[in-house]
Amino acid sequence: MNQPIRYETLNQAAIWFSVLQSDDATAEDHQQWERWLSQDTSHVEAWHQVETISGSISPLRHHNGQMGSAISNQLIHANQVANRLHPTSTLNRRTLLKGLIAAPILGCLWKAHDTGLINEWTLPYRADLSNESHIAINKQLSDGTYITLAIKSGISIAHSPHKNDITLLAGDIAIQQSTGSKPIQISLPDAVITAQQSHIVIRQSSFHNTTGASDSLALGITHKECESAHIAVFKGTPLVVLKSADQTLRLAAGQKTHVSSAGFGPVLPAAKADLAWTHNMLQATSLQLDQWASIINQHHSSYLSCHPSIKKLIVMGSFPLDNTPLALSMLQNALPVRTRQITSLWTLIEPA
Image (cartoon, rainbow, N blue to C red; front, side, top):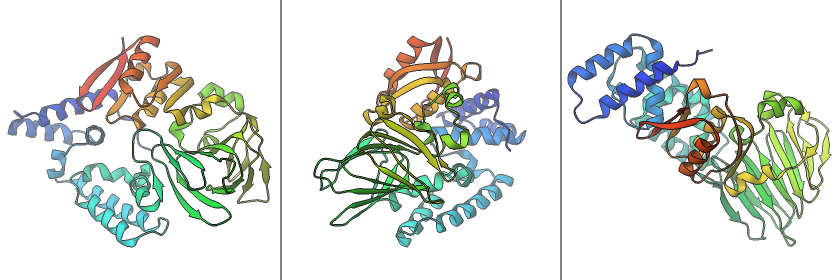
């Protein structure tokens, strides 16, 4: 398991990035950067993280050595992963991979397999409806069914005269059926939900699971269960059927649970916080600051990180997901922190 990159090393990498991106960077600057880069593998990892955050073309693509073969190996893995994806247009998949390989961001791809980025990048090519924006989007089906899709989420839809079939490929979804809506069947990795005239919220994304560590322990929820599908019902009585075993659960309005291949979790009261993301709000309850920053990052065009000394500060309250400056201002009013611009695309939250 890789060791976390030290804060000091990341800061050095950020400084080098600023130097090399400036208009007056000299050949000597590049030579000194290469010497720093070769001093330790953690320097290379830190550089890649800064490069990924900043989203710019890196001079590392001209740097020969062991990283070149490592990148090549990861691209091979990326192709293998893409070939195992849910069948869709072969031309689209090949075109996508060709574009990725040709792009000047090869230094960012060597961890794509481990981090699941390949699935994220190909989601628009596999889904009938996907959300590539930084806020939740809404879609109304022809029968009046209202769908809210979270960021980095996607679904496939099949219509028939008697029902709508939806497969949640990634992320989170909220479904509101009207009086005249057809019955709906929602397929998840571990379960199938059948509903009629219901209002359901389904969350699979870990960054939308805002349960704090203390809350998780109190509810008996393990880390693995936090990554399973969470189902909250606000109207109707949907039936949830487990795929791996002959188990069913009918939820009533005002109830929620989580489901995985191991079975169902406890049935608990649903809360307004489960609906917050559908209104582009983050409802934080006992959330660590580093977790808060991770969630905000998903809705922000640049990158937020927090200083190691304050990452475990507890954040509570409601924050807008579609207005990062306002969210940061509210955070600074609530906690003894301040923000500092490291690069044009990287903001650090540090002690006040």
